[in-house]
Length: 273
Image 1 (tube, rainbow, N blue to C red):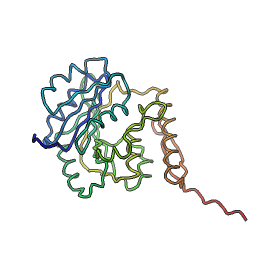
Image 2: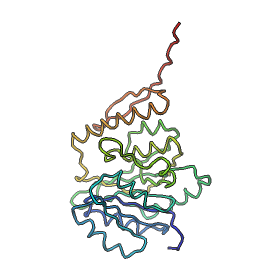
Image 3: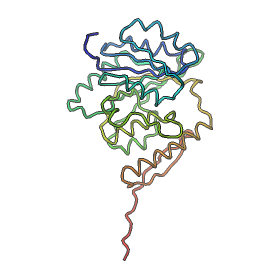
Image 4: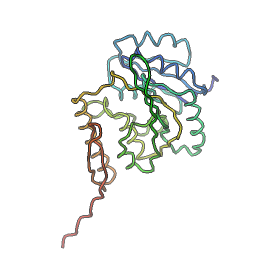
């Protein structure tokens, strides 16, 4: 690496992910593009996450930070944002990993954005099941280009990844929202993109740029689904109103989660005679 500031900071937020985090870190180390820093944000883990990370701290481009108390993903990402000094922040979940050319592909498309109009770059994702320590039954999720903010509001597919954010745009929108009663622990990914997409362009890259895992540690019970659906409904209503109150949402459920089935244009009010 050169003495110049790298293009990317890869941020790995982690909470009790000792079992998986080395795979995430190694995937950054193996990138063909070396234009990165790595920031590991430990949300006060109680397992051996710190122990698993220590072997990588010899590298001057790897930094480890531990929160004083468990704070939730949005507060962790806001703390990371305050520490980042590179133009772009790539979020890598601690149980996922990057294909070796992910950063190189992202860099190529960033350099094409001559006017710096895009606040988010993302690609396609391969989903892996984890069974008895083995990664099995992968399938590819192809995302899409969002031409309008309403297209993203209605999007009920897997969440886009990798999420490569322009740091200046993140700071202008105020970072991740922690004002809800769950303090940003739920739906943080969708909500930060909604903040960005109302002001900036986003760019889909039709390449596999991310590997995501599904395992038992991620299981969501019915109580958590109810919390998520409550916040989803509030979020949908908030943005529809914020964006001019032009549409009414017709809701449905997909895999137990509230989604917008379609948007109906509101009829204009009749004038009183």
